[in-house]
Amino acid sequence: GDSVTQMEGPVTLSEEAFLTINCTYTATGYPSLFWYVQYPGEGLQLLLKATKADDKGSNKGFEATYRKETTSFHLEKGSVQVSDSAVYFCALSEEAGTALIFGKGTTLSVSS
Amino acid sequence: DAGVTQSPTHLIKTRGQQVTLRCSPKSGHDTVSWYQQALGQGPQFIFQYYEEEERQRGNFPDRFSGHQFPNYSSELNVNALLLGDSALYLCASSQRQRGYTFGSGTRLTVV
Image 1 (tube, each protein chain N blue to C red):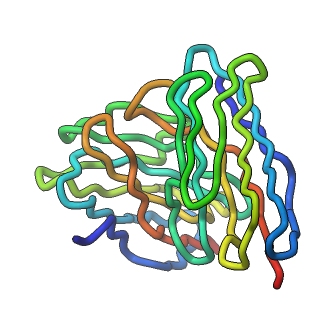
Image 2 (image 1 turned 60 degrees about the horizontal axis):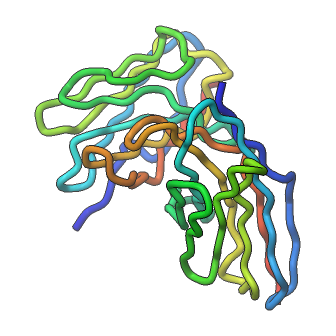
């Protein structure tokens, strides 16, 4: 079945450092891909998404490009802030409006 | 505009008991999905309700059941609780095939 694999955390960075969180997926069709963020004590918030190959999703300085040839959707940010500290989840959905399949999450901790 | 509201926020139950969790979707949303998030894990899909019918179900036993009401709110019921059912239960609402809005979840502890 479909699955999502994320890099193990925690990831610990200093403020203004470059961030990459790797995500690869396995799917039978052509899924939509997502990054969600979860702050302590809160639910999940959609960070960005891409619905087809070579699409780039972006939001709040974060970016990810849908790479069909490598089945990847790596999350990047050029300069992280302390406020970016959270858990990041990569996810896919085979069809719009259907179940999301999540990775295990990567904890990011940014210090000043 | 209220987002997704879940209740209760926390609860503690004993093994073998039954529990009901509640979710009010975001205004304008007609579809409700439930997820289980164990500690340190990603959310796992339980089921989705649309037009008061279960439209899609994940790999969860029949002890997990749900309901959607005419006002689109939803309940998740878990019977014969096991220690392994301890988790954060997330509700997500959507409108047709558009994006999901997640609630803050209900933290269930089974002792």
